Image 1 (cartoon, one colour):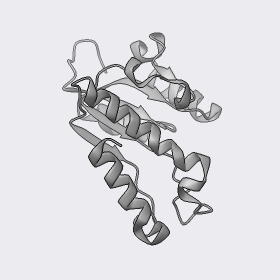
Image 2 (spheres, one colour):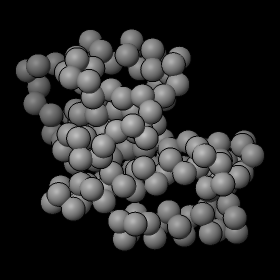
Image 3 (cartoon, one colour):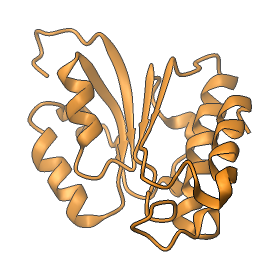
Length: 155
């Protein structure tokens, strides 16, 4: 985003991959305040794609690796939370272990960020989670019910 253009909103990009959410949010006036991605190759691609447009994100240290090492209170304020939380545990393409797979439990990091920001009076206005084929029917619909309950109640 150019320095002369003021952002319309601020977003965070969790489990960012190579930045699909970043492209979408930036294209409609958003500025990424924080991003996380642990995969080395995806991190390199993300940096190559977005550093020139958002040096502040990277130079500030707000491009994290392992989300488990981040204190949710330290995440800058944002309007929109985007999360491509790992789809492998829930997708038809994966082993479908859901929350029994360590990657599946990363969803609870998203929920904790939402809870902490809400408790601080900075509740996200919008939450966008990646959808994968099979999420709705995974574990006979129980997985989606848990996700909706947890987000709806802040844990």
